[in-house]
Image (cartoon, rainbow, N blue to C red):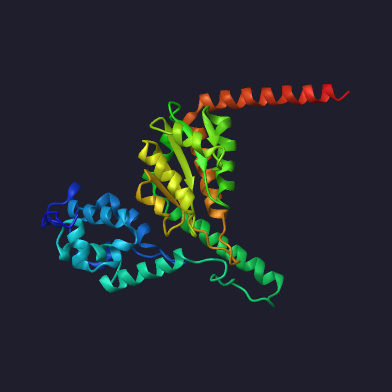
Length: 322
């Protein structure tokens, strides 16, 4: 990549008529509450980037967050643009300088490596129950609000489109805890459309999935910090065989984001040292609602038939017990 020719067109020859940033009014502002990651800032400005800025954004996304920990000139060389373009791009993201940008990325690296042993609870051991309840309300509300504020609508729409394509097979899978989300999503999807499965990687089942997965498949992958190597590796294998990857992850981004077709981040902060699935679950339920709405009559008919089959099974069970 270092051999790329530099693009000195900068913002003057922008795609879609984007203009150079001339004041802090055009910067991405960080809302009150939870910190905004660089990845979130990138998503917020992606629709108004110049051609040179798109190259920087792609380089950062493809090797996140390591690419941004290089010097400004190093990142510029990798992206094939000029160093001043990188500096202006960082300002556009809302940072006062490249040093502040890198400090934010270093903090993200630490956050990605967090574990229950390093994450302190938000209240002390002697705190009354009322304080715990209030802390849970505050943290949970902030996580939900930030998740939906930062939700990339184009990415979300693309995820809905992929999952509604009944020419595709849908396979959901995740990690130790996030497999619960994969199963929850699959339970709903199978009521709305055919050809869905929840995949639990195991020596007995994994080989067949690896052989069969291909261009007809959409894999909905769940991977959150303390990212699981086997989950990422299975998603990479599916991607290399032509499957589309829809990734649910946290704001610090699973390594699977490098090759995912759609990335849907959700906050995972909790009042305990264990990450929460409240916001990811809310995002899953929003996806289910959108799929139901998009499929329309076909989904209603399938739901109606499923209810009829369920009643028949219940009647048969009661009759057999006499």
